[in-house]
Length: 424
Image (cartoon, rainbow, N blue to C red; front, side):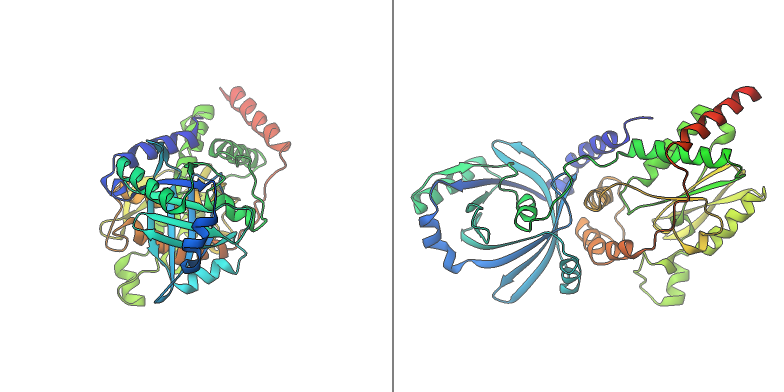
């Protein structure tokens, strides 16, 4: 199998760099630490405003995802911000930043879950410059200079050095001054610095389990793959399908279905629940009972009429007839639905982190031209993910995997391959 994770990331980053929408949302910042903090404290701390930030990402994720409560003269302001990791350019860190307002209810939801947090006081001496004073006495004052022009950044830095009567040292891109790392440090929460299971490893593990189940006597193996939008479900299912065909031939090519294919459609949903219908990730949006019935029919040898969802019309579309297969891969948010318990053989959850999934999903809205009336901008999609999709996803019940032990899987796979060789 190909290196799935690297290929997804490389392709998406290259496409994002060429997207005007993301270029317009780029931030370019210097992060600086003063040699002496006395003058900065004397000048700015008394008038600095409180800020609290919650992090739904870890420093090892592909994206940084934070929520912020900023206290202003008009009251608290709640926002969500998604950033890619960016790259250093002319001494400053350049990265895409997407920010959207969120409700206080959403903010409190994550706060109550014990999400890593960071508290600080922020002053803005003048436009393009902020000075952060942290609750943690071990964290230095951090001066941030943000401007697209190199010369203007230098002028702003010099102005702050003159005011504060000290030298500012550049720490741009260093984890020592990144708020995300500081949140884990100050909250005394740990995160694993190890790389999580790759999509390639995950795909091979699922494939081996499918083969083991078939060898054990299952006529039709249905595996459910659950993950948030952007977690890599489509990529994993494609890799498993290609590898099954490579190993055992076209006769074993799996049928690939998505719970998205069983969308009731905009018209039916608005007739039942009223217009406009916006609960796109709610269970009532998908006809999983009909999906279960289709899977029962395929187990009896009845061909399946393939479905898909048209993003332009927001309606389901019927396609070609698909012959039965011993393997069916079912991916989607509701691949774990109780409606499917009687027909599903296995269930797995994608190993992709929440922040990476949301980041890829928001990026994909632009690079794959998925914007529509419901989600016209990256900001609208990010807000929906934070306020609706993520709380819903984390509340879903996870069915048991019903999997073999790690030692049994390779034995079953070898037995299947031997059977195939003998049959030739």
